[in-house]
Length: 260
Image (cartoon, rainbow, N blue to C red; front, side):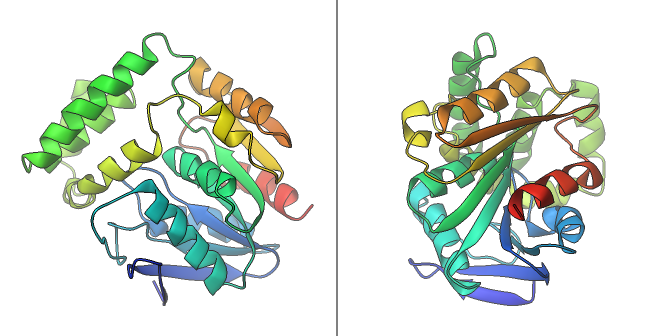
């Protein structure tokens, strides 16, 4: 990351800027850093100025404790200020939940877009599953077992045991363990795992909620529910896409939304 700014509590935040046009800050999901968002930023850069950053506790950014979701909202406010005082926001997965909270909290954003925030309202036993994950994750991290924390998250996303065992043997595993403590941040951002309808109803800017047509049904239903819960919501489904959406498919949809 080439740029640095400081959040309200003194946490240093690393970020990069690419492109030209309306300013858009991209917010990553769990187990990812700003670099994860760079392929999408590149797709936006012809018509937008895209900002990618390492959320606190990841990559080159700091991690002042104790953690609170409000601190991550302040991080976004600091980034908006650093890049000119106004921006649009885009968040993927749990990063989308953070975007919605920032917009509801009054961070000066022009628009907000999210991709498949995994609210579990439409998943049978979803609330119980989220509560169980929260308890197990907290225990694994408290006892210094980052690998187990990563495994818990991967199971939550639906990966099978054979795939997880393969991931453990891959070169990327050390990097996943390094950011494992930030899983607690994403867990906090997701709250009880259910869509906070009253909270998002306070968002006054246009919101685009996008899902993949090949994603699980509860993801698509949650995406539609977000668009229906905000006053100025729009819903899109990208046929053939999954939770690992392709930047070349998502990019043009976001660009059209952010450029009006």
